Image 1: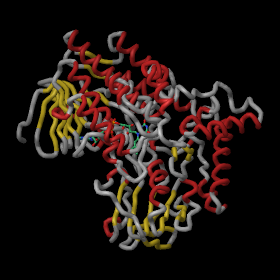
Image 2 (image 1 turned 90 degrees about the vertical axis):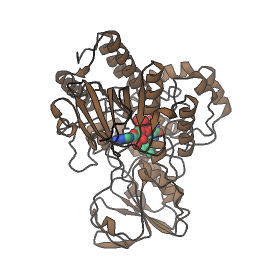
Image 3 (image 1 turned 30 degrees about the horizontal axis):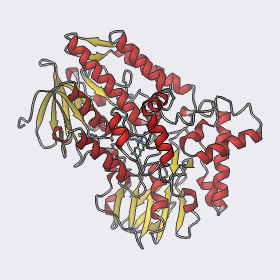
Image 4 (image 1 turned 90 degrees about the horizontal axis):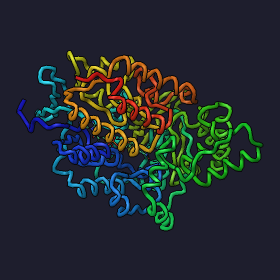
Length: 535
Ligand SMILES: Cc1cc2nc3c(=O)[nH]c(=O)nc-3n(C[C@H](O)[C@H](O)[C@H](O)COP(=O)(O)OP(=O)(O)OC[C@H]3O[C@@H](n4cnc5c(N)ncnc54)[C@H](O)[C@@H]3O)c2cc1C
């Protein structure tokens, strides 16, 4: 192993929005920091997911950094919901504006990180053999950055082009006149399908479980709205932080139960939220995410919309989800997902009962029938939340590997640290609320907490901090207990690891809402880092 740059205070793995902010924050503390990024670019999610139609499902005035007043005032989003190219441009702007690039090593995949108990530091190795040592490691590796490619028999034999939504080529892909298959019906598929459908000769969608899809009503950002938000951006962000989901403080959830109003009132409220668009729909009533009866009313409203939009009744029924709404991540559509199925060149194949048997050189086989096409788009999601860490040789004390540590499911105190892995922090990890919030808000929260923690350790002469096994066990029990108060355990989802064969079924995100979570993190810090062992 050749010796690379060594002895940085903080090594950051990943240069998406989390890694970039971590770099900014740690360097401002006067510490030496370096970010190692596997991709050839900063931007993380918004570099990898360059598929046609990729965009945020949270309004950009909310889904953006708040740490710099100048940045948030000066940056101009063109649309209410920014597209992937604009988000990637924003990430690059941030890297340049704050002089971060010289501290990012691109094309550098971390393959190994071992804690050296003698030297009390982390020894980190990249795929090209370079090594570093660091007092602290921040795993800014992303909650949705480890693509899931199903192990279809014969996938390598396909003679056409295979594309994964999260590993999209840098050059634009031309689908004109081609026969295309999309496997998947989650959020990425919902964005890809209506975007490419008009170009293709034929588009066949292989769907296992339909998603609930609500419109975004995306369009140019209204200058009057932008001016209003920017007149008190700090206040807007503060109000967002009071929301369970960390955004949409302009459209707070209703405090009423869906079960206590008349059918007409309920319908009017659902219509109003459908007209507003996006995740505001789930806030139409206070109990949609906590009461299956209330949830069923919201779900049936969306199914009625599907039946109204989709002309062919059989196709409409196949597109109608049966799981509780919001239980799997809801999709937000800016193009016209359901209407795409009215096109003569688009067809839907249900693979819920007869799974895909094999990929052949010409196409794929399901239900004993071969479907032929020229390009195969896998919109098959991610090994979410824990996938990026589980793909590394990551070892803590006494050589304990993360795979052994998390064999029965992720254990993570406050969503930030796991016992046996001192001075190693997770961002947007298991046990945090990040998946149910605007993730940038969570990223800023986590990094601020981690930076304060490092400063406190240095000020108090501590060399290491480590979650205790008791604290993390109690925390994950709390995560599970909170999930049980909601509808989230009533379907298979990536929140539970259910999309990955063999992954332990443990509910990973905390559904308590951001304010309660942030207060628990703050309290632990205030009380001298309770739940952590210090040395
Ligand atoms: C298509 C899509 C749409 C999304 N839309 C929204 C949205 O609307 N709202 C929202 O809140 N969230 C959304 N998300 C979630 C999104 O992941 C977060 O909002 C946010 O971008 C996460 O930033 P991050 O820096 O934590 O992770 P990422 O952006 O995933 O960055 C992690 C980086 O770590 C790198 N990395 C991983 N492992 C290694 C390794 N071993 N060595 C070196 N580098 C490594 C990766 O290459 C990647 O660049 C979306 C995700 C996807 C996939």
